[in-house]
Length: 455
Ligand code: ARG
Image (cartoon, rainbow, N blue to C red; front, side, top):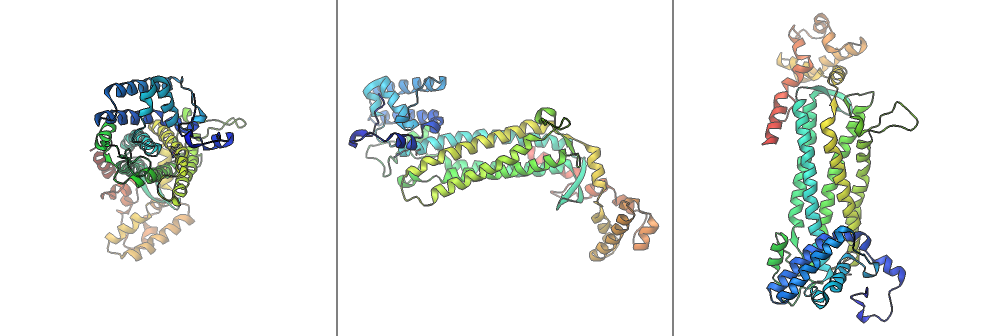
């Protein structure tokens, strides 16, 4: 029997379209394991405070556990008439165990129930996302360690700026992911608060032991205001904001990987199994994984906008608007987990092409700043040194030579402060090794950063 649990005061059956329009069961059935977890804790607490007898509690617990198995096996019939995951499971419980099932909802509302389910779900998913982040962070550390001495051009404005090491570049990504991780864990603290006991909006007259329920569910504490507990979804917005930053970071990495695999850069190779071909151009090997990850940023940032706008004009307390929180939140979780997984699987197999990167760093006068610093050490003021090196660069551009290929006589014609020892500072190795400062690109410092990260 699928009669609606709230049908008592109604004289007309629900319009068929309205029934489908207002139902959420198609998507919120994903919350089933958390809904059952929450109900189990609520039932045990109701027994502890004397609202349910031992026999009633046992029959509810057994019934819910059996339903969990039915759902997991795919044997559960989800009814749109029963609107959402909560009423579907409760109705099934009553089918199975009779009158005791009808007592489960004592001192509870779907409003505090759904807020609890979403928090339990999100807490578990944050932990799963952090695990994927950690796998990717580990992969970056390993790659950085292997390539701590590998020289590549560093860019500003996508123009060659100064040489850096590939390891240093990987550690830049690593730092971003560390902040993403912190943001998630910080958000988790605010997710991990329990709404149950807020009931519909005002609390409940039953002597619920909210601390006990919270303890059973692993929540840090019960919520402190019933109106707030059932109505705000700021925790989901906050999560989606943290997820958006992860998406933006992955998108920036992706952009670099796409550039680097092009024939014009050719800084890295991606294994065939992370690439796809073209149906018309036989030579093609396309970096689809980073391209898709870059493209998926749009939907994640879009979900952040959806949730923020969803919240903005809602009066206290619960409004049905909040049913719209689920699809954006679920898709954010799925998308971020998949993108992180793809990256964590792929990064250990990125093949840096050391010679190509080295050659690229030799073009573009990447050591011009080193020459200026050299002149400063010889007593030339930095602004004058800048001017002198500019002239040397112009000579190099006009004669298609790197700074290291210009003769001492020619350099000395530009500045008599230049001596034989200048060629030492014009090498790429000398340039990176000189930046031996906390946070700098010197291989020493990259190794120190890795050691710090490995703790
Ligand atoms: N499906 C609803 C949601 O997702 C559950 C809460 C419904 N509460 C209500 N009073 N209609 O928000």
